[in-house]
Length: 293
Image 1 (tube, rainbow, N blue to C red):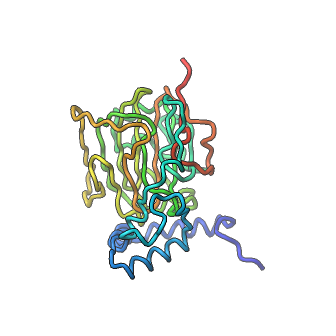
Image 2: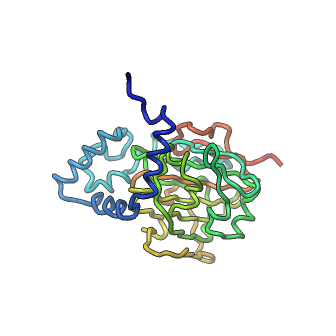
Image 3: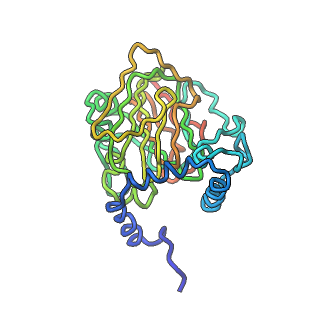
């Protein structure tokens, strides 16, 4: 009898997902943080070789095509892409997809709830760290949850030109964000460590939420640097008056290893109809369009 893969066996998926409740998330991620920064050439080359065999990477798209030219596994994860490999949607009013990856979910926010997977949702208020102002702003909007696998490009870019107003670091668990885990862990994205970045754009408010996960050993933004912290309380950073403007398509942050980005829009924007759960996406394609008046 042929073996049944995890994709075809819901019971096996549920069992494996449940194991994440007992794993030492932060200890495992700390070990990955250290291992990903080994620079001793023989060791880091072996690590990169093993990693790329497990996670095939399209090296011809990278600015540096030689995987062994990178000083560490972390440098390899966060490699730059050739600009011509990711053309941007030409309509400046449309928001760009900020990452390579796949769509986990994308739809309207209903009654302050965000759909996670079949039988699972979570509150917008909990996701944004109990910030009632943000909840009010995005309560009638839409969201796109975008999953980056370990083989994907790990830099995060701006969907639209935005002025940064504030950021919140929210400590939490580090459950895997693999699809089979998301399907079985309730409120996963509202429980994991995350960084909520709030911007004002010409098309209205926008929030970009960078969600940590097991083995994601660091989250960074271009204005703050490394964000991941051992703090047990929410940390807020206000940027009013600092005039931090990041242009459409520019890098705003990066993950070390794969994870998830959640983009929140107001009712002034509509998530593009091509953003269907399970669909592969590329940086620069249309994410959302302005609603007609």
